[in-house]
Image 1 (cartoon, protein in one colour):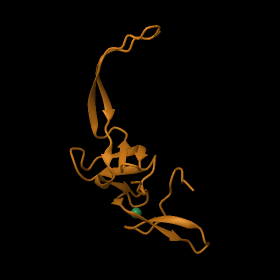
Image 2 (spheres, protein in one colour):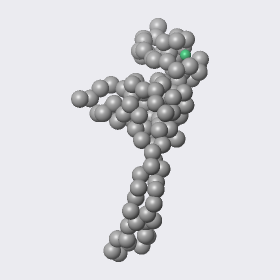
Image 3 (cartoon, helix red, strand yellow):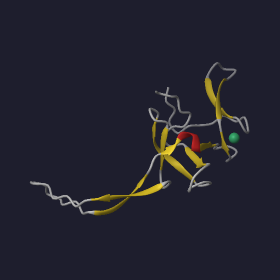
Image 4 (cartoon, protein in one colour):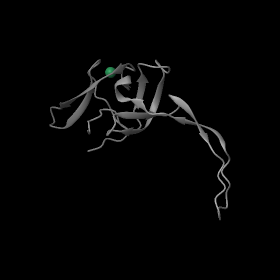
Length: 118
Ligand SMILES: [Zn+2]
């Protein structure tokens, strides 16, 4: 099931639930198919990695514990408005000029994206 996520890459989000509650970070990637979001530096988890010695490989990967960002549930994070600096939801609106825009539900200001997917 594919669902629309109103959070995109490079947005700042705040975690509302879980061990990282209250922390903020920048979205690295979203996984709309599963409703998951990967946020830089948040929800860190450890993965055990075995040492790799591939035949013909020039580089030997070291084994050990690797830190990585585990995906968060979309429902556990909220977008942070870049105008009022509060966790919020956004809604779509049409400007008097006819242009589509997204606005912050809290302050009503237009939410500006670094990169808007058209
Ligand atoms: Zn706002």
